[in-house]
Length: 450
Ligand code: UGA
Image (tube, rainbow, N blue to C red):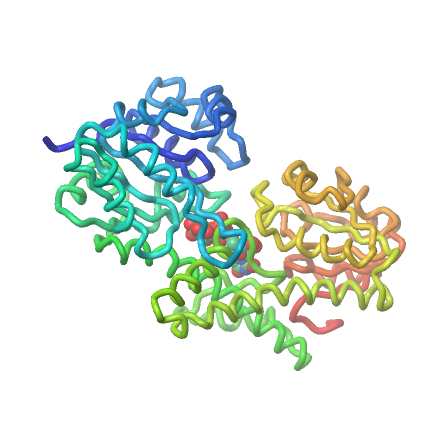
């Protein structure tokens, strides 16, 4: 019998899974979210999100109230409940190398498989090394008692933190990696509200491909974005050496529609739980496949990116008279990007940590990510406002471009600091305003004064 897509399970309720479960319920499906972390399941069941994402907590509560959305820790329950299982567990970087750690992906399939008693579709959404889906399909065939009918499809996810709900309900595109018409039909059923929208909305473009291609689309997309950011940051390095200005350069490039202006913002570089680990895992996988040379530029993109962090530290040292030891440095920003409390591989905290290791006292302020930052970086100090972080500081570092930092009054803040020196690591502050207020304003890829 053909499985039906009315009831879905979502395995893994981290960033991706929680968003997906809530949004699928919002599209009308009976949805069961599964996580091995009982605390997470309890929080979500009580309408609390374990992380910050605009709009998602309200939607979670709405969907819980409809009765369509529930959460569990039981694989047995998930197997009995749904015929379509979305796999949304994390694939972090391995601790012993650049490759992806697949223990959660494999663990989920091993836990689900033995409970399957009827044909179903396992739909991978996690970002995985190419070849994983085919391997999981073989694993599932071994594990499922029913033997036949447990199929794997791949449906990569492109959501951005801060825009997770919007990106899930109105994605730029959908990608289905399938090995049968049956799997494609089932996925079309699940995504019918997006593929055949009722209102006058445009249908979301769909690309149907094989499993390996679908897996690759995701890493290729993130690699391109990382490369684009590193390209403009490489230009920033050249501008610094040549006495040129990367901002008008980026602006001029952005007017060429073939290049475009998005992801062309120079600064301290990319971080987060995705771009850095994805390009590393991709390079590692390409090496395994014997095509490491084809993606060597990603290694360079990674290097350019990490060098920007060193560049900020170098500038801070320079502005501190050559030695950071004993200086007081204020860091504005801890999240890897604004609109998020995520500090995974955050450039802001990486810089703060490097400076603290050189003997400076580092005081960090972030509107949203302080609790997370405190846990991971106990050696840093934290203040609960811009002014409290800045008071008595020798140099101010602007490292995550929260909108509230653009509204700082440099004249008022200047009175509280020891030295009026600021490094704009995101190139979003108004240089002339800070300079007019008497500050030495420095930025990556830009001339000393302008
Ligand atoms: C990224 C991708 O944009 C999503 O499409 C993808 O689904 C997601 O990874 C994922 O793999 O799950 P995200 O990590 O939420 O999303 O953040 P981005 O908005 O892509 O920003 C990544 C980093 O690049 C941030 O640290 C940001 O500050 C930096 N960035 C971005 C720049 O330095 N310059 C830019 O011009 C743009």
